[in-house]
Length: 167
Image (cartoon, rainbow, N blue to C red; front, side):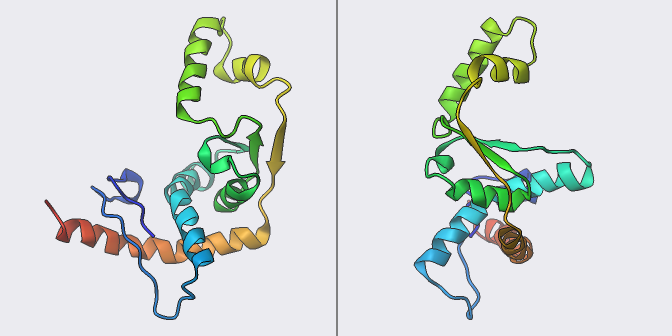
């Protein structure tokens, strides 16, 4: 599944053509269909994180998950941990997304008082906030890596769809 409604520079796709395909021998079940949608939603993030973590050697202790994907406890968190092969922390406020984040940035600009954004969030916003950190499951990491091995060659099909369906 390629959930491209617009272009994606990380994958070299200039505009979007949502696309779902499968191999003839694939087990096409509702569960597998739902899983591939979630995996595909994280594919570009995975590619970008691989640039940072693998190619650039950036160290990541944990990634903080926020937004609607994390409203159902453990589901998005475990899939994201598998995709990036790193722990993912989800706080009690994880279901709040973009507008809440923008409001936090505005509050930081007013009340940050010379601190870094990380310090402000840790000291004023998230201090004492209940959270749960989930380490990646090795079997899930292997499963996501297998997905990416099939996903990456399919990008050529996505690019061809963009080229053939211009206008």
